Every structure is written in C-alpha cells, then in structure tokens.
Image (tube, rainbow, N blue to C red):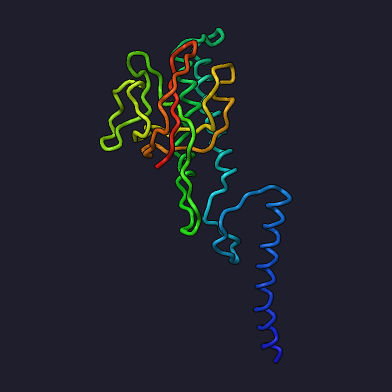
Length: 221
C-alpha cells in the first residue's frame, strides 16, 4: 500500500511542476518583458520552444552589424597614423559592414517555426549598392541565374523579383540623408544571402558626400 501511495504521489507531482513552470514563464513575460516562442515540450531537461525570440534576434543582428562596421574602422586605423581620412572607399566599406551581418547571425533568421504559427512576410528597406553610371557594389542578382544585376536603378521596376547577394539588414524606413543616416532607422531583421525578394517600389537614390547610394523598399518572398 505504501508503494502504491508513493507511485501516486510521484504521478501527481508532475502536473504541479508543469503548472509551476508555466506560471514562471507567464511571470517572466509580463514582469521582465522577456519573449518566448511556441512551447513545444516540457521535460526534465526543461522547456523547449519552436520559435526564436524576435527581440533576441533583432538585438543580435543589430550588435553584429555594429561590430562589423567597427572592425572595418579599426582595420583602417591600423593602416594610418593620422585620423581616418573620409575617402569614398572607406565610407562604402563602412556602409557595407553596417548593412550586412555574418552567416552565423543570418542563420538565426532561418530557424524553422512551428507549422501552426503564422509566418508573415518581412517588409522594409535595404541598401542595394552604390551606382554612378555602373554599380560599384552590387547587392541584387537575377533570381534564376544568381548573376549580379547590370541594369541601372532607373530601369528597376516595382514588382520585379531579385535575389540578395549578402545577409542584408532590413530597416524600418528609408534613411534620412543626414549625420545619422541608416543609424536613424531600426532593424526589422535580416534577409539571408540567396533569399528572393520583390521590389514594392522603385529604388531611391541618396546622394552621400562619398557616393550615390540606392535603397529599395522590398518584401521577402
């Protein structure tokens, strides 16, 4: 009889533990502001989630881009004893470093979500390169061949589909042509290299002091 009571007690305690875990997760979300994905499993090894935390992914992407840009600036400092000159090449490298992320960070965006979760298309603005009679840096490619585009930005039409050639940061709006530039816009996420996108508007030129940079409003397919 004692063994039977022990078994019953052991069985009963597991729902209580699960309920306690769920209460803790709810408290963490509302009190601490933490985000969790869809809960798929609770076991002795802990709770498992199917989705990534969007807040965490956005934060990592933002930090990654800032670090890549800082590395470019540091490398330039190593080459010169005087302050970094404001050359077009260096400014372009800095922009590219800030608007792309590493493959490791891009993989966060490719985490599979559960089949019952609603997946919405990512929309926003990305830098698509510098252009002055020809592309100095090409970010977009033909989706079928993977070949970088040759047409001018003025020939690019709304609704046209392309593939991106880098892990591009998606901004929440068109950057203003001021000191803040892209730093004045928040990151919405990352479009991994090879992803198909569609232009939702014609590209916009921003005349910087070092180059004409083009930005496009896009949606991920």
